[in-house]
Length: 325
Image (cartoon, rainbow, N blue to C red; front, side):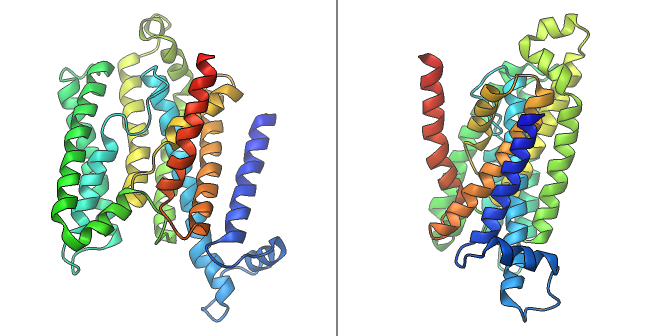
């Protein structure tokens, strides 16, 4: 309970810092409180209030939802595959979404839109998941080792395809690369609402199966002996954890490391029971993503995926080193 309250306070603090900082003008907490208290402005006559309500607030909420989704997805995958190196993109979801997102950018300007790109990226992500399941486990019993191998193979092939598209895209290559590196530029209330809905749905389902998934993480045979319906559990975890990752990639692009090292850190703080670990990881991931995006804005609006990689990789090295020592 104490850890949960601490993380909730940390998440609120991260949101306040991001709302006060932005990419250019700093606001004091008092200024921010006054703007929020008066509600959204009727027009853009008050530029500062407009920036807070129409630019900063939806972007902060979108970053929070994406961080929650990736961390919860990573926690679920690590329990499902019983592998601390599993992350939300382990079965090729990100590479599948990247194909759809990159292809959308190459559409004619009269056809392309942010919603079209999100739709294509999400569709190809889920199609990639279906293909991995069909190839890796044709008898529907979900052999996890085969699914991982199929995901790695599909991911390698599709990233090669994306690289080919980059080479052939000419002047559009910069736009494709910018999207692939993950960014919250262009965040709006519609994207925040879509991501919030996907995150809420995924978290509700994963928390609902947290107890049997915790038992499964000890061993599939032991879980079966204890009455866990392992095949159904694997299907639900795989689909909804992938849903969280696919929604994130389709809206903001590929942002790595969050779903890998945040669950690692949280596992050292709380017990491995997913009934506790899942919400703690989600809150920590949301706070980290909000702060990472705030840093990305202050560094000249660089891609948030670059910031998470610059922070996540060294942290993961330290965690691995501490584990081996």
